[in-house]
Length: 54
Length: 284
Image (cartoon, rainbow over all chains, first blue to last red; front, side):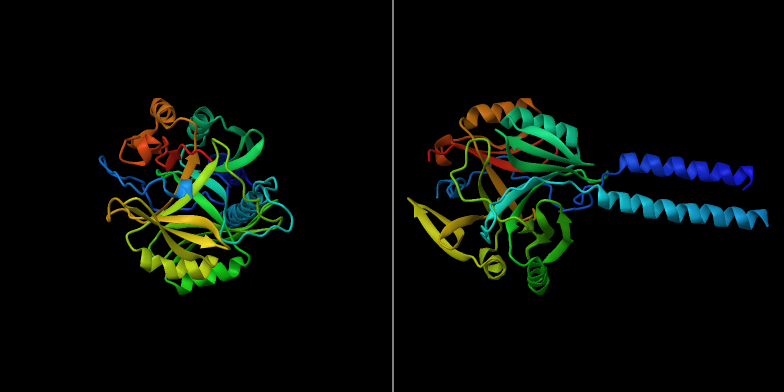
């Protein structure tokens, strides 16, 4: 293995380790539910909270 | 000759690292504590909640301060929240680029493969196919035919018993949709629910029951432009105080406590990552 090959392998190893640190391995990591949750500024619904009293 | 050798060595190294890296991910799935009682199966019951968050540290600080939850690192990108020693929720970090958090309720099923098939047949989506969570069981993430995301859990160790929820733990769950009839056939088949309606004064409220127990509510969405969603309620002692605290911690108040809704005993909040939830005072 010449110097150039060793150098390239070393760079790949570094990049992989960095990726390993940055990327989460939780199974949920890639889940995209596409929500942004919002209700609007004046939302009032008298049924909110009924379920909590059942 | 040297160039060919160089290319082959680099390619081989890349493949080895890819295998090691992906295998490493699988082996680092979180090991979770048992939450159920052996032999207790309650299909249709929401048995767990996981927060998908773009900022794990900020979410930890927010919920720790707001509800007094304590956290334990269980794997890369996953925290277990406890309240008074009991597991109450999980917090999972989303990949970079996903900016919007979301609370994901997990509903008990007895056959997760059937749940996935039922979802596909009904026009819903299997967002994340069944995977094993050690200590917990098989989990999958689904979207109903109207696009509301939720999880299902086929437990290895039984489901938690029904009990009156203590403060700072989960009280209730709802599906927000403008097409109750459209989703009901799906949820009835998926979880064996039966739809009921109750009236309190002039207010009517749709909800699903299974084996005589109310399990999930149904509510009209405030804005037809936003996707259908599940929404989770946390029981608190003082809605006004929790609302003020959430604001101070960087959360948003989406519906402040007001006299028109449960006499001010309920509010809709969002955490700093954008995940919405409801807080409510109840006297049970």
